[in-house]
Image (cartoon, one colour):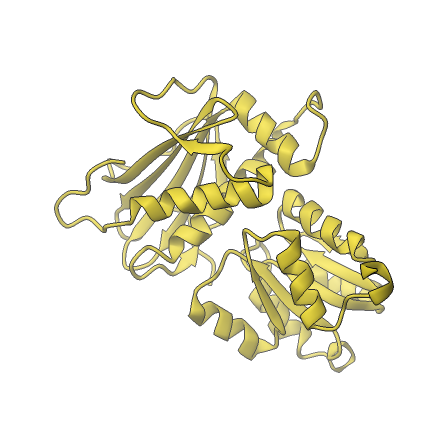
Length: 127
Length: 165
């Protein structure tokens, strides 16, 4: 399975990609929402996007809105990974089409629990 | 922790300490107790660097972290899982320092009354001009034996870096 990690911080992309790689995902990366749309065009096999909220050029929220307009991407799981932890922000992202929400800071276990909840953990990798 | 005076916004100093410690324990050190609150007089920052975000709400709250450059380099190596002797360039330093204040500031946003949009992080080798804004809180820590400060400033309305929707 392939995941797209969207964050303007290389540090955070490394951390998230490391967790996903350990869970058996191949990963590609984008530094903002606009670049992420381009990556989805280039990688139609992406099944999961991990999305920061606060980014230059195009925010994570704007990316979710744009991605949800595309019929061919409707099966992609969108997971916000962000410091924006207020209830209103979470509700706003979920209403726009995000499936899950991870608040920074997080441990690998928190992220893996979310992936399991979403049915995206490969049992062979978990074993 | 500094006293809060007059009609300035109030923040929970212990909660701010906990946010910083939780970030370091979760994403930097893998354990609690490495970033610890400092007491007494703080050792001066050597070759100081400053990184900040602005929380735009009913007022603008600036969340500012200051560290010595060598401490910042250690922090960058920890976040990027680099060897202890790996050289750190300015871009990697700025990325790591910016993410530290982004996560801490984003969590502090929930403590700030009327907290709204969060600006993108800024990094500089001089303290930002806060325009004489009052200090809301000041905490200093030691991390791996080196000092690190976390301060909150109440900026004038419409001041600060632009927040994102």
